[in-house]
Image (cartoon, rainbow, N blue to C red; front, side, top):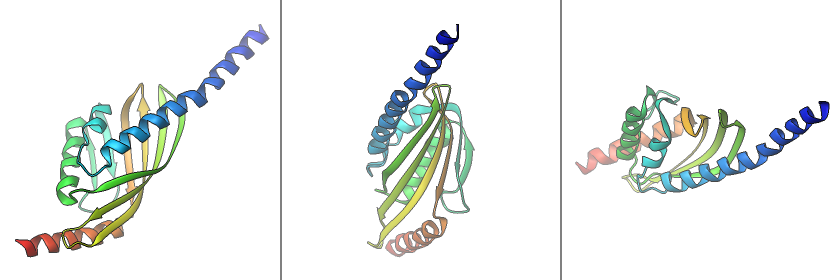
Length: 162
């Protein structure tokens, strides 16, 4: 009996690296599509649970605490209007857990060309909870000082252009 229990434990533990590799691969593919500057956020929204809890931490133009797929899509629309052509590059991804309770942590690089032709560069961390292939929680932390400074430049340049 002890051997059977040991065998199950080894099998369950042995599957984790494969599951994590698959999730990492899917996350990388999602970020290649979503972060390419084209504004194609639809694959990320499609992965969200209907009652997704999304938070973009900070009192900035993109700061948010919202629920639901539609509100999540609206946030992406707003981000695209604020920073058209913004590119998000995945620097690193860490996966932990099993399909019923997976945690994904992503380190991001953010780049955009602002309306005044200056460069915006930032970095951020995304903390995601996934259950059975659906994103149920998504929390994003970005350097809010850099973001707010970029938004001020963007807003001034757009106002100057009329």
